[in-house]
Amino acid sequence: MVSCQAVANGTTQPRRADTDDKRKLIDSVDCFIFDCDGVIWRGDSVIDGVPETLDMLRAMGKRLVFVTNNSTKSRAGYLGKFTGLGLNVNAEEIYSSSYAAAAYLESIDFKKKVYVIGESGILEELDLKGIQHLGGPEDAEKVVALKKGEYMEHDEDVGAVVVGFDRHINYYKIQYATLCIRENPGCLFIATNMDAVTHLTDAQEWAGNGSMVGAIAGSTKREPITVGKPAEFMLDNIAKTFGLKRQQICMVGDRLDTDILFGKNGGLTTCLVLSGVTDEETLLSPENSVHPDYYMSQLSELLAVKEAAKVAA
Image (cartoon, rainbow, N blue to C red; front, top):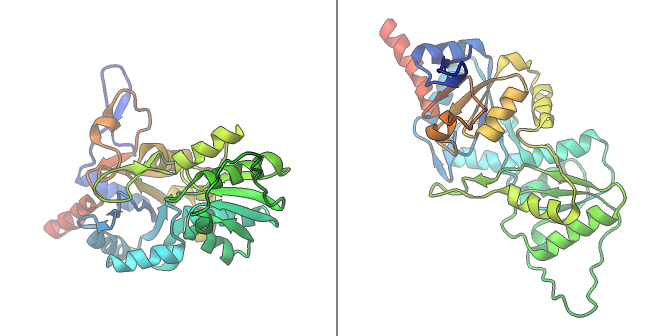
């Protein structure tokens, strides 16, 4: 199935999918998992041709699941974004890393409190699972004076620190999380994702959650449990939730180190689109070892299959 071409040193490198490749891709899977930023939208703008492509795949009987490592919104929040952008998506088709964090804690029968570095999406998903939490947006304005003898108290009942993207991260939050992880016995350190950069607007890349997680990893000398792409937990939970076998699924994304690695590690068919983070030069670079099964400029190239069928008819 892999659409690659041989090169002089005996290795292979990806090549652009032609119409036959796209037809084979669609015919070979029952479900498409789509990353959102860089695949479906950039910032607050839908990428050209995406609505028509999703409609075509639905008409062909394909199951669609939308996965994002961005934890700032809950699934309900993302449904509002999809609807606001004119996209016909159901709430049960959305899987965010904020939900993954809550689902992970539920899966281990977590009973203590969670300290959150992150935004409202994580808190909303924890509430839906009945998990107690503190921190998050309410700590955005807290300041550490570092005056003589200053000592920060922390809740000893915190059994996990969840770190998601946080536009209002500050020294108070970093110190509070550090105290919980270092001083509360058995306290978990959970990252919604480790993305280095992300498309928060359609104008440029912005520092991602990896920078927030890195601050806590640096102060605690601990590596986090990651629940978002490319972690195994997210894929396993998606497959169970939607009743899917892995050979039925194609992962479509714009990142090699999260989306494509997520798919390849999980035994999925993979398709890279160049409408987001990864450009063709990076993909074809000799230094890159993560090769998708297929790649194309953007998701709407799949519409070529529909046009070819019209011509054939």
